[in-house]
Image (cartoon, rainbow, N blue to C red):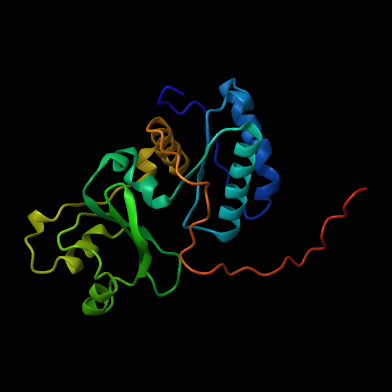
Length: 222
C-alpha cells in the first residue's frame, strides 16, 4: 500500500500448505484492515523451487484473481533477486541462485534487459572451467553477474578480462525484506507499468518429480 509492506507472515511447514494458505491470507487481510474486494492484484512466486509448493501457490493465485476479477502477476525468483529496478534496466545481466540439486552449485538465468533470455541453466561452477563456459556460451563477454556465487562465476566467465571492467554483486533477497516482500515489490511495479504479464505458470528447472498421493482421495459429498 503506497509502496509499503503493510502485513506479512511466514511459516515453515513440512506439509499442509494447501490447507493453511487461505486462512493465512485471510488473517493477513484482517491485519492490514482490508478485504478481498479491495485488492488490485494478486502476486505469486512462480519458482524455481519446490514442485508442490509452486503448484499450490500458482493455482491459488490464479483462482483468487479469477474470482475477484483482478490480475494475477507471476514473479520468478530471478526477477525478485534483481528487484523492481530490473524492469527498467536495458543492460544484459546474469542472475544466479543456489541450486538444491546434487551435482549443481547454482542455477543461472540470463536477462536481456527486463526480459529473460533463454531458459535457466544449472551449473557446477567449481568443475572444469572450459565445460562451464561451453554451457553458458550464450552469455555475452563481460556481462554483469549478480546473486549466489557471483564472484566465482564472474571469474570463470570473464577469464582474461580486467575484473574492474566486469561488475558483480552478491545480492541478498533477505536484505530486500525477504522473498515475499521482494516478489510483492516487483509485482507492484509490473502493475504500475501496466505490464502484469501472462497468467502465472510454474517455472521448473527440470521435469517435475512427483508421485501419486498414497493417501485415499477425499469423499465427494452429494
